[in-house]
Amino acid sequence: MSGKRGNETELKIPVANLDAVRRRLVAVGGLRESPPEVERNELFDWPDRRLTSSGQALRLRGVGGRWVLTLKGPVSYRGRVKVREEHELEVGEGEILAEIFGRLGLAPLVRYEKERERWRLGEVEVALDRTAMGDFVELEGAVAALEGAARALDLDPAGAVRGSYVSLWEEHRARHPELELPVDMRLPEP
Image 1 (cartoon, rainbow, N blue to C red):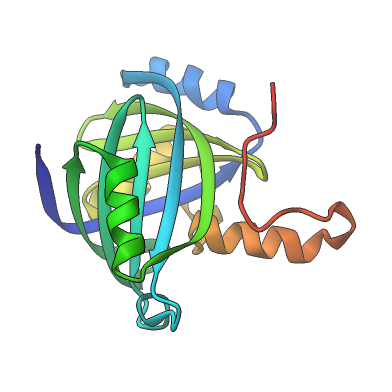
Image 2: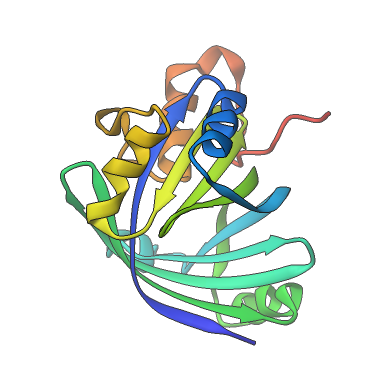
């Protein structure tokens, strides 16, 4: 098992066409690291929501038979770039860990899915994300490199959104009450 700790620095930019970004990645020398894979995420907290109220998030992510546990600290911003302390640990059995969390009094608050394709552009990790509320490009790397990478992909860094997928989904649901969308963000059935 492996882990990492440090700061996550990212730009999350909504896009109308992931194919156009994919073509641009190829044109500027981006390297595809993984094909599209469905990621299933669960955020856990205690009933009093002490993690959420302190700006932290405890996430269990399953993708391709692998599980990653992540603890994220409170968010701050440097311009449009989101900065957040992040500790990640690959775990062997996500279902068992979720059961342990339950025995400790933690419960899943929300579940969300996305289809993610991973690329690398120099020192910047590029994720092409398809979600139930639209498509996004996430750029992660050194703060100084993110805006340049966005521009290389013909994306406007000023268009970056500040929310997490969970908060963006909550906003999307609030804007579209007529759709009666569930609390959990699921990918549409093919």
